[in-house]
Length: 146
Image 1 (tube, rainbow, N blue to C red):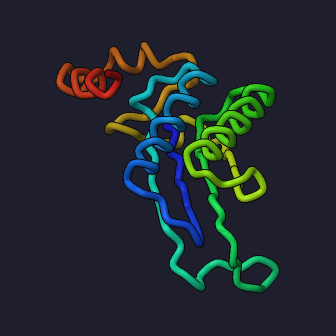
Image 2 (tube, helix red, strand yellow):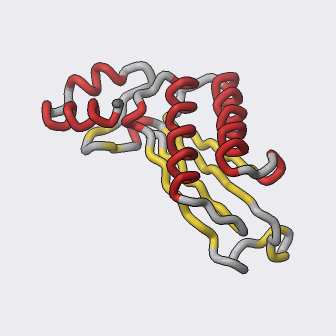
Image 3 (cartoon, rainbow, N blue to C red):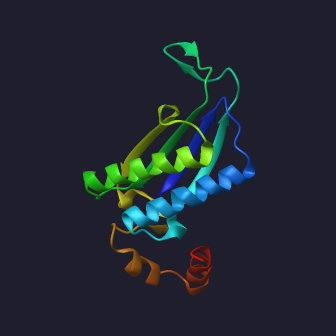
């Protein structure tokens, strides 16, 4: 956790832009929450032309939607800092303006999620959770932190 889905309409994102966005989202989440970077995954989805509507009408201009699912238990001030930092990262990486960026963060209870085969810990209990993993999985996750 977290899982961030970047859905984009009426714009093209190059592989370099996607990598930059994924790195910026991962770094921002880590810096704002303290969660290890190996928890963060970023998935990109392009909306096919003519498949995005607002007010019942086709959207013509470029849009990026960031849907983030994060562990519950963080204060509102932290989440505000997180979404504002995400917005800036998306503006910088995509070249779009802030009125073309949409961000939604959803809190999920850690006990209702499994990642890497294990129920996720409460925020702040990552070290104990990590210690309970197999040595092979620990090595794999440590490699993602580099």
